[in-house]
Image 1 (spheres, rainbow, N blue to C red):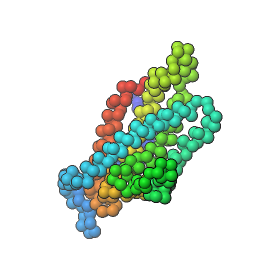
Image 2 (image 1 turned 90 degrees about the horizontal axis):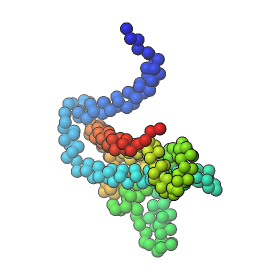
Image 3 (image 1 turned 30 degrees about the horizontal axis):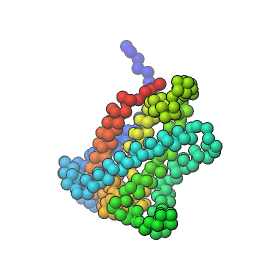
Image 4 (image 1 turned 180 degrees about the horizontal axis):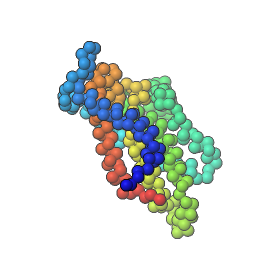
Length: 290
């Protein structure tokens, strides 16, 4: 009779318990609540089946929220990854004050998002903010309400997210660059490869696992935006910055419709799972593991 070793399972048991308690169970509970009505006072929740999903699809605000979330993700994910790669490439070489530059790049990461949002509120304040002061003083441009306009509010929020996340992703790229054997750079230099050719043909393929890891994390971050939206715009103006997770929070805690919030949560989980699966399928083919 084959004996099953228990020690490996006992070692991973605490992690499995936390994963089940704080990830799988809440997801199953949200799915169960999405099939019931919201309890009100002494009136308990009742079975509604797919009615909450039908109401969610009929909500005119949902399409605006999904479109905003798609723009937000499509802008923040590649921008933060490219900026992190460039910053890591810059501070990986020998340069005067390299430690200070690394610290400057990483500083936004250690700030709480609420603090970062308040800092950028000062930048965006019409007439008195730093951005308007610079644009008016140097270029004579008129004052702009960056967070009060439908055309600029979402992009203003995107800038804050990229500024906040790029330094965090830079650390992973910096670690990936330092794991590349120096002999490869020397061999490329002997073969006559320029710096751009070395980066494109050698460095980028070798840090592909890091890029995959960062891309998945950037995707998750793009869909879990609440705090700086809450501080800066509250989803306005006219739902211009209303993103999916903020819409879930608003539905669940402002309008106290927990059943509809659970339904939106299931939609969020499905979107994240689908996009992450596509990312793994596309990027895994170009990922080289050592």
